[in-house]
Image (cartoon, rainbow, N blue to C red; front, side):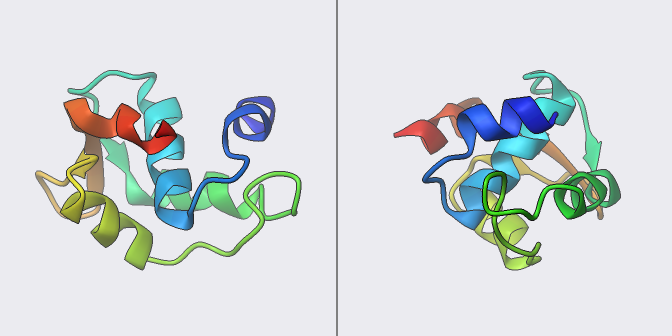
Length: 89
């Protein structure tokens, strides 16, 4: 997970980093639901500057939903939307 984040999270906003973690945990599967707890757990392990570089903020998940990169069909769980790859633009 750390190598993946180090390779792909450089210069991404907090919201995009959130989507990146969801994508990694879901293994790119649009149907797989990822618990928010798991995203936060992984995030806490990677707050150093060379990885995510900032603390988790629940605004990231809200912003990602508003941008249609993730969906939340049930509380505390996220799945990717087809447009999630736009985080790399």
